[in-house]
Length: 499
Image 1 (cartoon, rainbow, N blue to C red):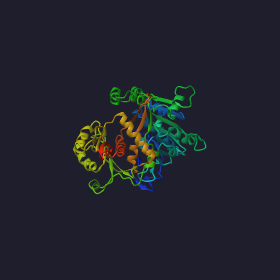
Image 2 (spheres, helix red, strand yellow; image 1 turned 180 degrees about the horizontal axis):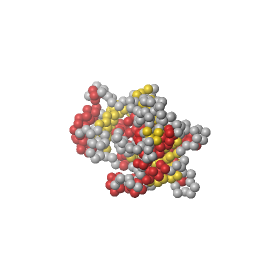
Image 3 (cartoon, helix red, strand yellow; image 1 turned 90 degrees about the vertical axis):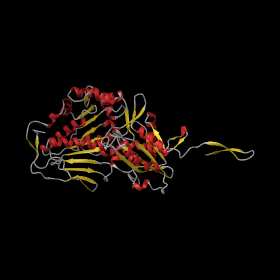
Image 4 (cartoon, rainbow, N blue to C red; image 1 turned 90 degrees about the horizontal axis):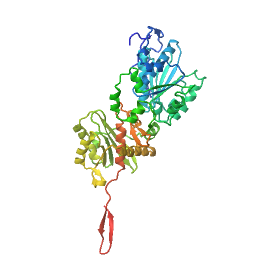
């Protein structure tokens, strides 16, 4: 960035070298008491980077703003620019202000937070401190906070009623329609942002793509959009609007890649169609996290034939982009499913994956394997070696080949939620694992059909959640066939027995 409007004496950017202190991740304060405040260096602004529709959003100074915006149009980027510009102005005045950024998940909260850090660097405003607050290193994020030299703060949280309650701050809720419970979250945060005795008047920004009707975001939008005298200033940006304003996206190529007319209409043309709900909310996951559950076991565990512990595997196969995940469950007392291993690999050749899976399958009682796309070839090979499980065809080997139809998805994911609600499942407390399990949404289409979706992220495509759902299915199948055959027990007596 050239001709930036800020020049800060002392260090600039995000401090490195985070360390764990009192269950908090903190960046070292390089200059806790800077000798000089920010000074004007040029009349140009980093906000000049914004496209026209983004600049209209940033320049709108209304207290209450709501943005119905398509995916990939930079709604978090432009909102971060507005927020940091406000923080910069407060720093110039040597005053304090606070922004609270809430998102549907920890991953999304931290990704949005990164955009705010980028804007702070563009404005050349130094960050005096950075803290992530958790109960332990793998616990769910409570908050992440960056603090500027004169006390201004930006706080990012996963958007839940307990994490947003009590903050007196300007507010940005991103992808608000996709919160675990947007209505309860809104009720929890509203008193703090409307109380003038708690730090003066607060700005409120809600941005999201649509997630059907029947949630607080849709309710607020429909009550204010194109309504004379409405309280909220409304901004609607479809992908077509963004491209007209200069966003470099090939619409036809994007539409072809989506290959889903309803998904295109809702996520890119901003129409309220499907309704999505998180399959496994954070509260549900917290209730099944078990300190006895493990992410891995020693290699000799899989070759020790003396251990008769019944194991069941779910394998979600990926070859290049997606992960291969093998989730191992043991069944305790016939009912409780405890995680013994969550083994994930990426980019491994199919022969090497076979070598990795073979000892695990030998130890397992039942295996549910993802027999879709690239998994077909390996599935055929596994069935040849270990036998197929398909009681309807009188096949009682180890491997059930699971083709991912809509019926199968509904069956395995609904049963996963059911046993999670029953608390008969134990999973490790792990941040990457938790975000993966939290990423799957249950989608209800306008026609009443149910499906399940998850976004791609650097950590996969809900591959761990899929493997867990398959493992639960494997652990729920019977131990063997039941057939009746006639038995001759004597001259006149004739009965039947179970074999």
